Image (cartoon, rainbow, N blue to C red):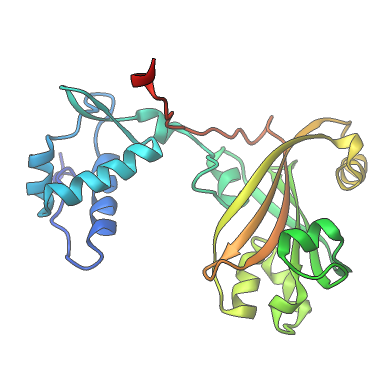
Length: 265
C-alpha cells in the first residue's frame, strides 16, 4: 500500500466550521476508499467519533442522514454497514444529476444541441407552475441530449421572462449544457431544489417528441417524462422543465428507505 493510500484509508480530523457538513464529507471520503469487496462494516461509533474528533451526537446525526439516503444501513447488535449498491447506481433521482453527467456516467459520450429558444405566452399550466399571470412572457428552450450518436433525452424549459432581467438572449446558445448557468448569470440566483412528477409518454402522442424522432428516422417509442418545477434559493419557482428520457439508454435507479409501522402489526 502506498503512503497516499494509507493516508486515505483513515478518516481525518475535521475542522470545526460547518461541522456536520465536514463530518459527512469526510465520512463519505472514507467510505469511498474502503475495499467493499472485502469489508463493508464501518468502525464502531465511538471509534469513528474519536478518529473524526467529534462527539457521538454529531456523528449519529450524520449517520442518520447517510442512512436516509441509502448509503449505509444498520444491523441491530452487529453494527453499521455500507450499502455497496448505492455506489453502483449510474443515475439517481436524488440527488439529481445534470444530463451530460448522467450520460457520461452511463458509459456514453454526451453531446447537447439547442434546437430552439423563443418567447411565448405562458398558458394556464405554465403560469400556474411558475406562479405568474397567464399570458405573461416566458422563454422556452428546447434541447436534445445525445449519448454517443443516439438521442437519449429531450428537454423543454419554461422560464419567466421577468426573471431574466432583460439579459441578451443571443448569449443563450453558449449555455447549451445547462440553462441554469445562464439564469445564474442573468439573475445572480442559484437553483437549489425541484419538485418532480413522473409520467410515461408515447412519442407518437407528443408533438415535440414525434417531430424530433421522425426527423432522426426513429420509430415511435415510450419515454419517461419528468415534469419538474425548479426553485431558487429564495423558494421562487424559476424553471418549469419537461424532461423526456429514453430509459433504454439512461437507466434511472433509486434506493428508497421504507417507513413502515411494524409495531402496529
